[in-house]
Image: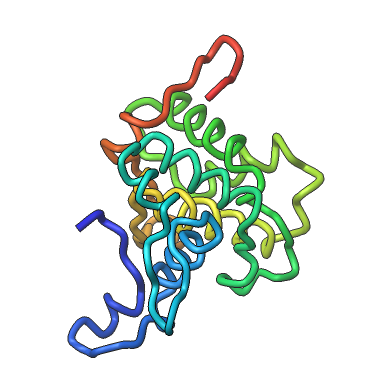
Amino acid sequence: EAGIRDWYFEEYPRQRIQEDEARFVRIARDLATKAGIVRKRNNALVMTRKGEELLLDKQALLETLIRVYVHLFNADDYDGFETIPGLGFRDAGLSILVFDKVRKGMPGETPTDWDYVRAYFNARPDAYTGESSANGYMFRTYQTFMELFGMVTTDSYWDKEKMERFLSINPTSLYDRMIFIDEEVDLI
């Protein structure tokens, strides 16, 4: 309902699957556990007192989840890009700034994944190690971090002219409600 999709559900919509087979479910569970919102007791997840308090304050909940995701979470465990530790998710703030600048720099157009990748690696050329780092950044930032938090939706499409597959990344109404960037100082 929140727009979060998982390739497994899209590929096998009627097949019953286990919790560990859905990447977003595993990430959400592990993120909530690291944030202290839930804990495991008798092979079940139970809400903690901290979790109950955070559920009453959505702003604090969001800030806690993003802080834990950026500083304590290890996205390398979930995406197969282990050779690029920290790429993308440690730079969540920079990625949001890049997303905003690229969108505003291309009014009336729909930027592709490679527009965002180029802008990110222009800001962080030290992080670029080839196409694998570009793919890792794209997947971790837009298809995991920003999509997981409901900030964007991503859709793959085939460009017949260029004979290439691209990813369109569109902000959600939630993104516009939760993110404000002061352009004078590039502050989120």
